[in-house]
Image (cartoon, rainbow, N blue to C red; front, side):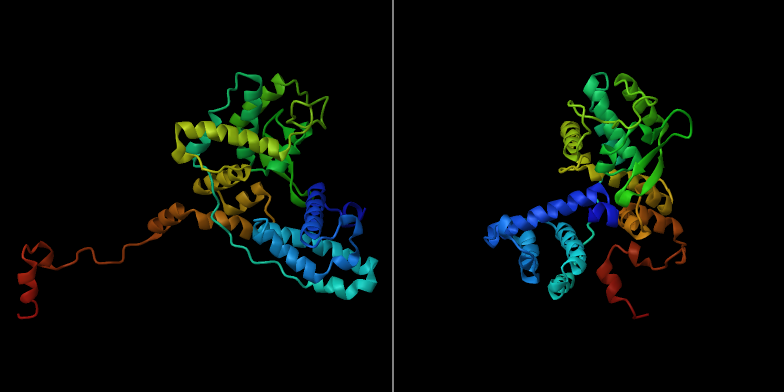
Length: 327
């Protein structure tokens, strides 16, 4: 009750915190031989937490980002316990003093425009599932949304009855943003909704994308769809399809392509739903080609138009060098 009602956190955050504690109790069971049913508050101490964080990276192969997310969940829990179990206050403060690790910001992996075009050519839109898969991939790229944001889309999220076409996306922290839709993607979306008999006037709360059981698509299901068609595209041209693909690469791709087309970084930030422009700047830092071209265009020629020196045309360089300075 604390997280949804007092902290007002999203369901995704609650799920992340749940996974963190499943992982932590697995560590206590496997590494400390402490059974979950016998674990007490005294087992949630600084030494165990530090060992757990090290275990995540060294034995589980998790990234620094995952390690920091697990720590954030534990921090949130002990912050609550500071008031609920005050007798352990010193223990909780020692855990709260554990810092997050500084993580590197790797260059985003993204598809080229040619790669996206090849990817979207793979689904067979004349068949039932092929049209659904094409709509998923095209919409995820066009909006730059996260995979969970795509899974959470409902019929009432889309406004395609009249221009300007747009879609309402619920992002991290329950923040809502309105994203414009390209006309060519709206054409695909309308065909999909018509073929799947998705009536916007009747089923407003229905997920746009469902699995064969009629349930909302999962992140794993959407990832499977992307990788299926990425593998197919790679057969035609492996040079423009990343070796390892993820749904987030479509988000990176959209941001990079907009940046390369001259779209303002602030507008890209708003499209992606970033809280800070600093997060979006990673795309500007990554696009070395655009930086090089921008610098070349902005450079003025301040050097002499003619550089004298007849040694360039001298066929006998050694003779020229020996006579240098003897005049």
